[in-house]
Length: 191
Image (cartoon, rainbow, N blue to C red; front, side, top):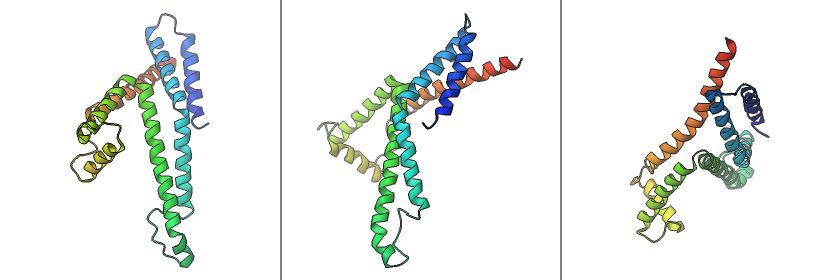
Protein backbone atom coordinates (compact mmCIF):
# COMPACT_ATOMS: atom_id res chain seq x y z
CA UNK A 1 0.00 0.00 0.00
CA UNK A 2 1.32 3.41 -0.97
CA UNK A 3 2.50 5.49 1.97
CA UNK A 4 2.59 2.64 4.45
CA UNK A 5 6.10 3.77 5.44
CA UNK A 6 4.68 7.04 6.76
CA UNK A 7 1.94 5.21 8.62
CA UNK A 8 4.45 2.82 10.17
CA UNK A 9 6.70 5.71 11.20
CA UNK A 10 3.80 7.56 12.83
CA UNK A 11 2.67 4.43 14.65
CA UNK A 12 6.22 3.85 15.92
CA UNK A 13 6.49 7.46 17.12
CA UNK A 14 3.14 7.07 18.86
CA UNK A 15 4.33 3.88 20.66
CA UNK A 16 7.49 5.63 21.82
CA UNK A 17 5.53 8.62 23.07
CA UNK A 18 2.99 6.43 24.87
CA UNK A 19 5.73 4.79 26.92
CA UNK A 20 6.48 8.11 28.58
CA UNK A 21 3.09 9.85 28.51
CA UNK A 22 2.29 9.55 32.22
CA UNK A 23 1.14 12.94 33.45
CA UNK A 24 2.77 14.89 30.60
CA UNK A 25 -0.08 16.68 28.79
CA UNK A 26 2.12 17.80 25.88
CA UNK A 27 2.93 14.16 25.06
CA UNK A 28 -0.73 13.23 25.41
CA UNK A 29 -1.62 16.01 22.91
CA UNK A 30 0.93 14.72 20.40
CA UNK A 31 -0.35 11.14 20.76
CA UNK A 32 -3.94 12.39 20.26
CA UNK A 33 -2.92 14.37 17.16
CA UNK A 34 -1.11 11.31 15.73
CA UNK A 35 -4.22 9.19 16.40
CA UNK A 36 -6.39 11.68 14.54
CA UNK A 37 -3.94 11.88 11.63
CA UNK A 38 -3.80 8.08 11.37
CA UNK A 39 -7.61 7.89 11.45
CA UNK A 40 -7.85 10.45 8.65
CA UNK A 41 -5.26 8.55 6.66
CA UNK A 42 -7.07 5.23 7.02
CA UNK A 43 -10.47 6.76 6.11
CA UNK A 44 -9.00 8.16 2.90
CA UNK A 45 -6.79 5.21 1.90
CA UNK A 46 -9.02 4.10 -0.98
CA UNK A 47 -9.12 7.63 -2.38
CA UNK A 48 -5.33 7.96 -2.09
CA UNK A 49 -4.82 4.62 -3.84
CA UNK A 50 -7.15 5.74 -6.66
CA UNK A 51 -5.22 9.01 -6.95
CA UNK A 52 -1.92 7.16 -7.25
CA UNK A 53 -3.27 4.70 -9.85
CA UNK A 54 -4.80 7.46 -12.01
CA UNK A 55 -1.56 9.43 -11.87
CA UNK A 56 0.40 6.35 -12.96
CA UNK A 57 -1.97 5.78 -15.88
CA UNK A 58 -1.74 9.40 -17.00
CA UNK A 59 2.08 9.34 -16.80
CA UNK A 60 2.23 5.99 -18.60
CA UNK A 61 0.28 7.39 -21.52
CA UNK A 62 2.61 10.37 -21.73
CA UNK A 63 5.67 8.10 -21.49
CA UNK A 64 4.23 5.98 -24.32
CA UNK A 65 4.14 9.09 -26.51
CA UNK A 66 0.46 9.91 -26.25
CA UNK A 67 -0.40 13.55 -25.79
CA UNK A 68 -3.70 15.28 -25.09
CA UNK A 69 -2.95 17.95 -27.70
CA UNK A 70 -1.74 15.46 -30.33
CA UNK A 71 -2.48 16.81 -33.81
CA UNK A 72 -2.05 13.46 -35.48
CA UNK A 73 1.18 14.29 -37.31
CA UNK A 74 3.49 11.44 -38.22
CA UNK A 75 1.76 9.38 -40.89
CA UNK A 76 -1.63 7.92 -41.76
CA UNK A 77 -1.67 5.35 -38.95
CA UNK A 78 -0.84 8.06 -36.46
CA UNK A 79 -3.58 10.31 -37.88
CA UNK A 80 -6.18 7.53 -37.68
CA UNK A 81 -5.37 6.92 -34.03
CA UNK A 82 -4.91 10.58 -33.11
CA UNK A 83 -8.48 11.15 -31.95
CA UNK A 84 -8.50 7.90 -29.97
CA UNK A 85 -5.11 8.71 -28.40
CA UNK A 86 -6.18 12.22 -27.48
CA UNK A 87 -9.35 10.82 -25.93
CA UNK A 88 -7.35 8.27 -23.88
CA UNK A 89 -5.06 10.95 -22.48
CA UNK A 90 -7.89 13.40 -21.86
CA UNK A 91 -9.88 10.69 -20.05
CA UNK A 92 -6.84 9.73 -17.96
CA UNK A 93 -6.24 13.38 -17.10
CA UNK A 94 -9.89 13.91 -16.09
CA UNK A 95 -9.87 10.70 -14.02
CA UNK A 96 -6.74 11.92 -12.24
CA UNK A 97 -8.24 15.36 -11.53
CA UNK A 98 -11.42 13.73 -10.23
CA UNK A 99 -9.41 11.36 -8.02
CA UNK A 100 -7.43 14.33 -6.68
CA UNK A 101 -10.64 16.23 -5.86
CA UNK A 102 -12.18 13.18 -4.15
CA UNK A 103 -9.05 12.61 -2.06
CA UNK A 104 -8.89 16.26 -0.97
CA UNK A 105 -12.60 16.16 -0.13
CA UNK A 106 -12.10 13.02 1.96
CA UNK A 107 -9.23 14.69 3.82
CA UNK A 108 -11.31 17.80 4.43
CA UNK A 109 -14.32 15.82 5.66
CA UNK A 110 -12.16 13.65 7.90
CA UNK A 111 -10.01 16.42 9.39
CA UNK A 112 -12.58 19.16 9.78
CA UNK A 113 -16.14 17.94 9.26
CA UNK A 114 -17.86 21.03 10.69
CA UNK A 115 -15.89 23.52 8.61
CA UNK A 116 -16.32 21.33 5.53
CA UNK A 117 -20.11 21.34 6.01
CA UNK A 118 -19.98 25.15 6.19
CA UNK A 119 -18.00 25.21 2.94
CA UNK A 120 -20.54 22.84 1.32
CA UNK A 121 -23.39 25.08 2.48
CA UNK A 122 -21.66 28.08 0.89
CA UNK A 123 -21.39 26.21 -2.41
CA UNK A 124 -25.02 25.07 -2.28
CA UNK A 125 -26.16 28.63 -1.51
CA UNK A 126 -24.23 29.85 -4.56
CA UNK A 127 -25.82 27.16 -6.73
CA UNK A 128 -29.29 28.12 -5.52
CA UNK A 129 -28.56 31.80 -6.17
CA UNK A 130 -27.39 31.07 -9.71
CA UNK A 131 -30.46 28.90 -10.29
CA UNK A 132 -32.84 31.51 -8.97
CA UNK A 133 -34.23 29.16 -6.34
CA UNK A 134 -34.83 26.17 -8.67
CA UNK A 135 -32.79 23.85 -6.45
CA UNK A 136 -29.11 23.39 -5.76
CA UNK A 137 -28.94 19.74 -6.76
CA UNK A 138 -30.12 20.37 -10.32
CA UNK A 139 -27.21 19.59 -12.69
CA UNK A 140 -28.00 22.74 -14.70
CA UNK A 141 -27.06 24.85 -11.67
CA UNK A 142 -23.56 23.32 -11.52
CA UNK A 143 -23.20 23.93 -15.24
CA UNK A 144 -24.41 27.50 -14.74
CA UNK A 145 -21.73 28.22 -12.13
CA UNK A 146 -19.06 26.64 -14.33
CA UNK A 147 -20.22 28.82 -17.24
CA UNK A 148 -20.06 31.96 -15.06
CA UNK A 149 -16.46 31.05 -14.17
CA UNK A 150 -15.63 30.48 -17.85
CA UNK A 151 -17.23 33.80 -18.81
CA UNK A 152 -15.14 35.60 -16.19
CA UNK A 153 -18.20 36.65 -14.14
CA UNK A 154 -17.05 34.52 -11.21
CA UNK A 155 -13.45 33.94 -10.17
CA UNK A 156 -13.16 30.26 -9.15
CA UNK A 157 -10.47 31.23 -6.63
CA UNK A 158 -12.94 33.52 -4.88
CA UNK A 159 -15.91 31.15 -4.70
CA UNK A 160 -16.40 30.35 -1.01
CA UNK A 161 -12.78 31.41 -0.47
CA UNK A 162 -13.18 32.21 3.25
CA UNK A 163 -14.76 28.83 3.93
CA UNK A 164 -12.21 26.95 1.84
CA UNK A 165 -9.31 28.71 3.59
CA UNK A 166 -10.87 27.87 6.94
CA UNK A 167 -10.97 24.15 6.08
CA UNK A 168 -7.40 24.20 4.76
CA UNK A 169 -6.16 25.97 7.92
CA UNK A 170 -7.96 23.44 10.08
CA UNK A 171 -6.30 20.52 8.28
CA UNK A 172 -2.94 22.28 8.44
CA UNK A 173 -3.30 22.74 12.19
CA UNK A 174 -3.60 18.97 12.65
CA UNK A 175 -0.47 18.26 10.62
CA UNK A 176 1.33 21.13 12.36
CA UNK A 177 0.46 19.76 15.81
CA UNK A 178 1.95 16.37 14.96
CA UNK A 179 5.05 17.87 13.38
CA UNK A 180 5.63 20.31 16.25
CA UNK A 181 5.15 17.61 18.87
CA UNK A 182 7.50 15.17 17.14
CA UNK A 183 10.17 17.86 16.72
CA UNK A 184 9.94 18.79 20.40
CA UNK A 185 10.19 15.12 21.38
CA UNK A 186 13.25 14.59 19.19
CA UNK A 187 14.96 17.66 20.70
CA UNK A 188 14.29 16.34 24.20
CA UNK A 189 15.73 12.97 23.16
CA UNK A 190 18.97 14.66 22.04
CA UNK A 191 19.59 16.24 25.44
